[in-house]
Length: 214
Ligand code: SF4
Image 1: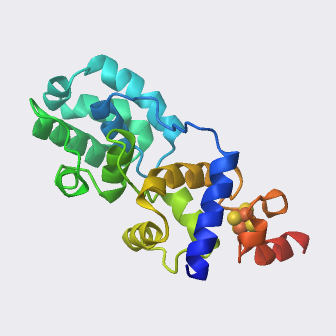
Image 2 (image 1 turned 45 degrees about the vertical axis):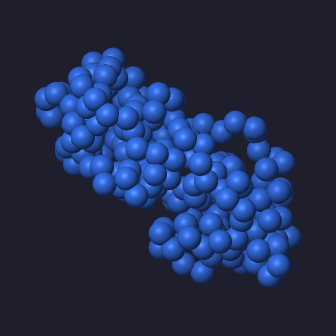
């Protein structure tokens, strides 16, 4: 096994040990509502998504209801998530594409739906269908890059590079544990390197620690 694969396994195991068994960031767990929540989560926080999806699904509870929703009403409800015009258009179009159909279970089919990119598709495949999925969002991308597990910041390349380092059975769990770790320890601005359980495995630690001691 090459060095980077070994390091990826060690990172996986440590994060697996210190993380809760179930990790969920979005409140809506019904498959369709979950997928819409992920579409809304682009460029905003999950907290904000969880705030707007309550009223959104109270007003438009079914796929058909959302498919027939007036765009202005949806825009008004989801406004706080940003990019609300585009998101409203996409989630209505996505609902229209799924009326009387089941949610596809493969990345290739999912990315053909309006507003669904690889991140959303991977979330659905992993969370709803319990299949291997590498979910590259801002937290995950930052963590694996700082840990030197990838040599790119391009989300699609990150997805494939990480996928090649770990057994598929570990992909979804790693997506969630590394994401949580990015939110709680390896913060974007001031990572908590002093208390980090991955410090001995991280090539970025010394640089951050030097800056913080200056
Ligand atoms: S040592 Fe610092 S930069 Fe490296 S993973 Fe830990 S918190 Fe992130």
